[in-house]
Length: 465
Image 1 (cartoon, one colour):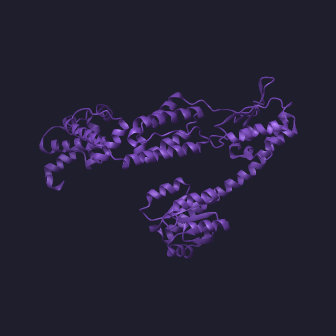
Image 2 (cartoon, helix red, strand yellow):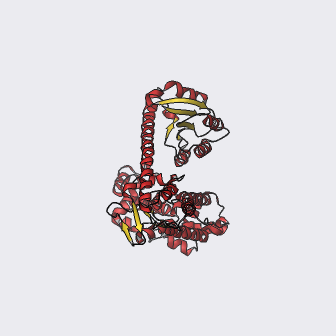
Image 3 (cartoon, rainbow, N blue to C red):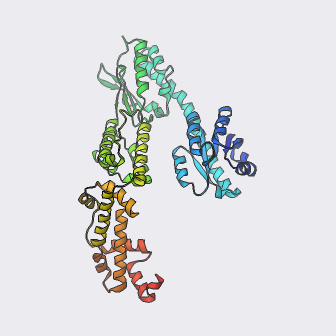
């Protein structure tokens, strides 16, 4: 049975959940309840718990802080958050912290809860099955690695060095161990068993004669300190390990893909849209970049940020001297996003900047018939494109392109109301060369096509619009 802890400062919510639901039906058992995060942490220290149902807004300690501390102590603990319908920002943060699901309190009726708990139960059972398989595989893989190393080195002591207290060899990234190890014989300069192994990992062991057990242990400790940058994913890391040094390399990345990734980061569009930030961060992780190229992007990002925003934010950002893992990169990017979001929403704009933005607004009002590109307009004002976008949104209330579309649609409505110009002529008069594109923009803004709008005006007049 899955042990469940319910954490909510509302006693009625806790008692209602416990009493109403047939927990055994979901393979669950309520192990306890707590009214706040501090109390819940004390409970977790004393009792075995698999799943926590936790409110997000509680006294003494927020639900998010409780999640962080509980996850730090018990990484395998699963969370489902309880929330009211206004907590969507908190829900996103909770999901990023590792929550597997959420239950809206407005859905607290038996039918909805039954469907949600069934879903959670199925998910957790599958996860437990996966972990059980992984544990069994670890034992098999440990035996396989031991046998392989012993076979290659001809030295049982060497095999013991590799496996003794070094569970790194049985991590999930080695789940294709049987088909994933090359052995390189340096003396004969050839691969052994190429028909059996598939390049998941490269052990460059050569001969071990003359190497003491202490030397092997020292080399292995060096390897363990390095760790896998990409979370032990076998198809991502090829390790050359000649005992005396650690070399790392990955599959070559497509140059075009690399440049595209770099360009997306340096555009800084992600500052204003969290979903875009999450998307390109995900794409970066899946890109199979070498660590060196990842550093290249991060360094370029640091330099571009300081050039564009350093003076405005009144501080320069500094990339850490080294990233030990992908998690370190994620944390740094997350901090950078938070800095940018804060700059976007909270910074005080100078009088000169506000005046420049108002000039840009006036330019859009007067030149809407022309081809206007925000980047060119920003250059005229001597402002970086990304900072121009942030400032325009703060001063005017909407992004520049959205404002320009609004001006053009308003002018188009006037043409449709008071002239007999064709739709194509109206489109051209308000700055659109493509009539079909103009019609799509108009319909999205008004809810009807230009032709429908004109007919409605002719039939009913402006009073009904």
